[in-house]
Length: 40
Image (tube, rainbow, N blue to C red; front, side, top):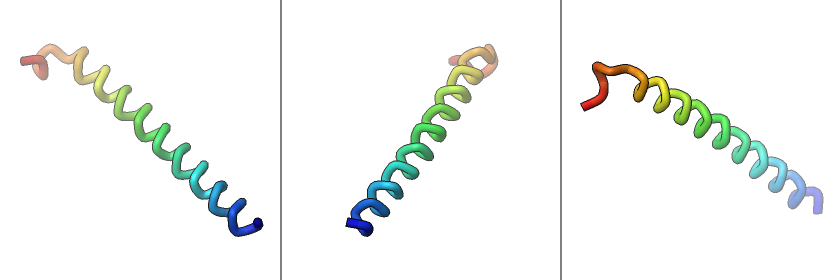
C-alpha cells in the first residue's frame, strides 16, 4: 500500500507540473496573439 501511495503522489506531482506547463503555454499563446507582427 505504501508503494501505491508513493506512486499516486508522483502521478499527482506530474499532473501539477503538466497543469503549470499548460498554463504557461496558454499565457504565451495569448501574448503571441496580442502582437500584430506575429499574426499572419
